[in-house]
Length: 135
Image (cartoon, rainbow, N blue to C red; front, top):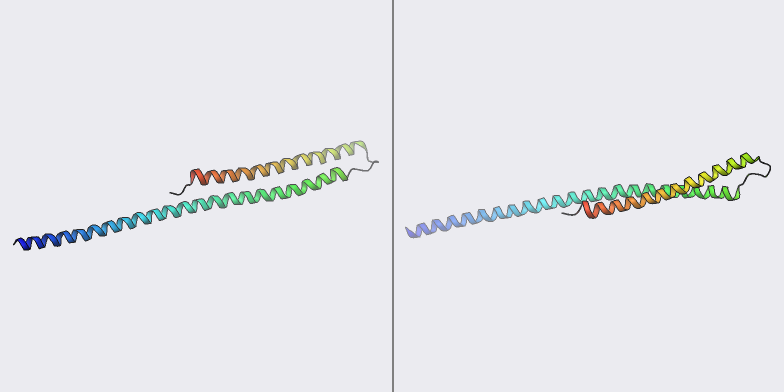
């Protein structure tokens, strides 16, 4: 009778151990899968931030290029393209005013575009290092 009780206890312990090992394995697998999902989600968020900031930087770089080209053309007109001496004074004044204001606004456009590029890059850096961190 004692041997039968011992055998029954051993089989019951062995059964519970297998169930416990299965539960532990499933729990570890579930936690590993959850961590993988969180890592993938964070990577997707980080890729989205890189894509959005990269698009903004690309647009601003194009603005800088076009504004710089126009700035060169206007500067060339201001230096090498004065009106003839026979032109009335008011026309020369209006020409100088228009070309001068064009220079001013194009310089401002280049400065603003470069500043926007810098801000977008800084925003991307801050988001990636402070807000959207890898879990």
